[in-house]
Image (cartoon, rainbow, N blue to C red; front, side, top):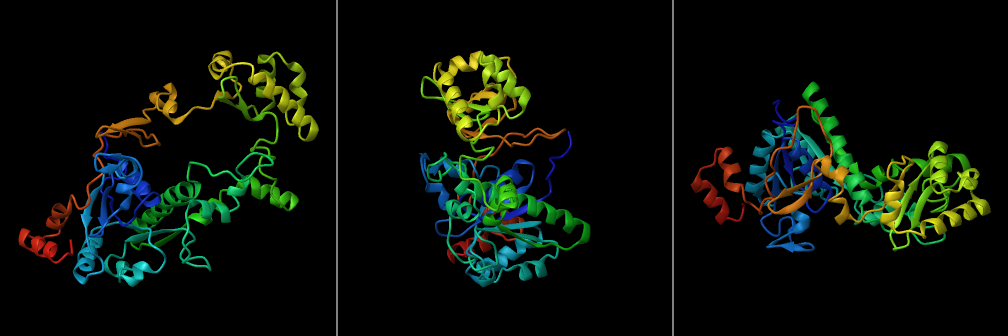
Length: 388
């Protein structure tokens, strides 16, 4: 068996909560050594957010597996010195502070690069390291609001709807950070020089608003929410309620799928309404709504079984965890008694091994500092001084 794809990559993770921790968990899943560097106070307060299993939240457990944890007080000179010693042997530092905090700590990119020229510093923030909003506080709802994304989510005529998939945090923060830091790592290995990677969650959300931008380019403005091709504006692409209050997703965009759908419903008369808008589109959608409301979701799933026309059930997450396709792909794993999502990308000659559970704060401090050459007495002295 080949080594894991990221084996030998060492990551120092200064992040908390969601975007950064999930990004570094993805790195750990594919073989990187991730050392979570936490302060000597509260540490990553995700540990106590939301529902708890024993003394640690489910939230923290499912975005921090496979990592080590050390405590360092970076406000003390001795803590900064230890961190820089870790940087000497690292490839990446990931941080999620407000812009300027790393410089104030004496650990900005210039300092890290002086210690290790190949180091990549990945900074994840709401609005980026520059610009008039750079120092503003924010959350996912604010980032996708500024990016014009939240405006597009919701039913026609209704208010914007907050999704329970954090688009700014996860697309903008987690995935864009991974993309950026891996690009910089490839460059560093080729040139011997790292980079400072500046990830703005707002920028990344904006950069993926493709269909709204196409409308702006064509017509000067985005379509109102619920009225564009992929937001429910046409009969062939939308959500329809079933008799039991559940829903079916109809994604019959291509004419051949729409034709199959109409035949399956024994309504060939609806075929001309494939991409209808306005009054005719409303009429066709109402016809479909009445049809889907006549049976339960389970009955419709059975009806469309074997008819490949992009009509599928809208599942609740607890159902998705048992879906045969997702099970066949191995997308649900159990770590320390907690069900979690498996690494989402499959690769040849690589199977994710057993995962270690998310670490307690400072659980690996002794191990990591010993590897730096500190003896037990030195570590005890640092602990007594509140440095670790």
